[in-house]
Length: 232
Image (tube, rainbow, N blue to C red; front, side, top):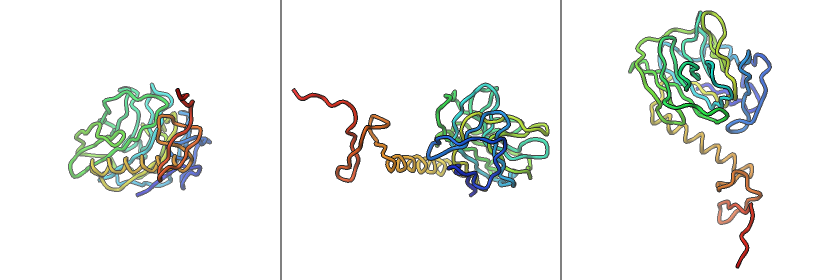
């Protein structure tokens, strides 16, 4: 597995176009402006004619156009595109000639977990959104790509395209096809880690996102913020 957590560092990738850092889904995230900014890992990470899984936490700040979160450069075009499809107005795991489309309209400014899976043995291309299978399509053949895996753009017709506009956090790539159960468990693990981080930073699991203060009671936290009810 290869990972780029983006917690204030590029994780070995080269940042192009001077992107900024912002609050992430957990910790920090890479903030991209949709115009020339991306992260280049400098190497071909995935065997694009075989089995692989690629995933990231994403926040889309501007819809409309095509926006690619993760891709891997081929000679003229990317072998795959984990993206927002401007033509279909939804998330997609795409090849050049087909797309596995999510049956939802993404809300800008909200965090989503996207995972794209290529299962060469079964001949499938799948997209998961927040740990749930959104769409699976047939994809018996795939393009070879020996260029670098890039985060925040794609390649089409020999030129860089589809720059991501928004934030990207915790990008991961596996050289195997994860099962639906594995993707769901992975998403739950990431969600649990977020809860642990928020607890350590003083957040509570209560109705208010940021209570005024938290008190430990019997090993758990209880919220004491907000206006108290007057006793009768």
